[in-house]
Length: 423
Ligand code: MTE
Ligand code: CO
Image (cartoon, rainbow, N blue to C red):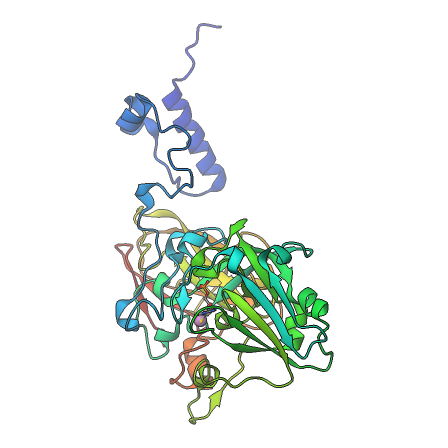
C-alpha cells in the first residue's frame, strides 16, 4: 500500500452510481448513500437478529402478507350474486406475462364445482365411428403439448362502451389471464374416435349445472384446440376447470369450456338459448353480429394506472403494459403521453408470441407534467388497435362484447391516474 487511504465504501458507491448515471445520461433512480445515513443500512434490523421460518412452515406457499392486496376483485353491482359472476385479474400489480392461477380472473355461470379426477369422464360422440369415454388417467396417456395462451372474456372492457366507467386496469381490462397449459390436442381425441371428415362443427359442454354448451367450427377444433389438465406446471385450480378444460387459443373465453365433459361431432351448430342470446353484439342499426370468436388486438398500460399511481417522484419512469391478439403475435406497441397526438414505440420484453400476452415497457423520464397515457397494439396481420371513437363509428354504442378500443389514463402532477376518454 502506498499509504493512500482507499475511498470509504459509501463514497465509492456514490461515485459508481454517479458514473453509471452519467453513462446512461439519465437521472439516477437511487440517491447518493452518504447524503443521509439510512438506518435500514447502518443499523442491525430485527430480521437479521433471529431466525426465520423453517421449511414446511407453508407446505404450499402463499404470497407474503405484504402483497395481500394483489388479489382478484369483483364489482358487486355488476351481478346479482357471486355464483353467476366474474372477478378480475389484478393486472395493475403484476409484471411479466404469466398469470399466477391464484389471481387469474374467474367467470362462472353456475359456480365453480368440485370434481374429483376419479369421477372425471370425457365423452366424444355424435358423428364418429366409435363413441368413446376417456377417464382422467386415459388423457394422461396421449402425447402431450405445452403452450402459453391468453384467455380473455368477450365481455372484458364491456362496461366501457358508453364512456370511461371503472377506475382501474384490473376492472377495465382484468377479464384476462395468460397461462402455460399442458394437455392433449383435441385433434388426437377426435381421431381416436374416428370423426366424420365431412362434419363441420363440434358442440362442447362442461360438467357444471350451466354446462356452458358451445359450438366450435371443426376447422378450429382440428387446428390448435386442446384439452388442458395443467396450468403453469400444476393441476388446474377448481375455479379454472379442474381436472380438465378446453383451451381455444385466441378465441373468446366463453368457448374455453371448464370441467369439460362432452365433445359432440355435429354437422351444424347448436343454437342453444345461451348462445343466441349472449355473446352477440348489437350494432347501431339494431342488427347483431355473432360468431365473432377471435379476440382482436388490444393493449393496456398497467402502470402507471389508477390503482398503480406514480409514487416515486420525478426522474426515471417505467411505463409498462400488456398487449395481445387472438389473430397472431404482437408485432409492435406504441405509447402516447399526450392522448394520441404523438407516439413512441415501446420495447417488447420478449418478441410477441402467438395468442399470448406480450409485455411492453417504455423507459422514460417524468418531471411532474400531466400525461394522457395510451397504448396502441399492432399484430403481425397488420391490424392496428382502434381508438374508441373509431370503434364506436363501426359498432355503435349498444355492444358489451369485444371492446378493444385504446384506453386512456390521465396522470396528474401528483402521480395519481384516472380513467378518462379523449375525443
Ligand atoms: N365453462 C363452464 N363449464 N362454465 C362456465 O360458466 N364460463 C366461460 C368459460 N368456460 C364457463 C366455462 C366464460 S364466459 C369464460 S370468460 C371462461 O370460462 C373463464 O375462464 P376462467 O374462469 O378460468 O377465467
Ligand atoms: Co366470458
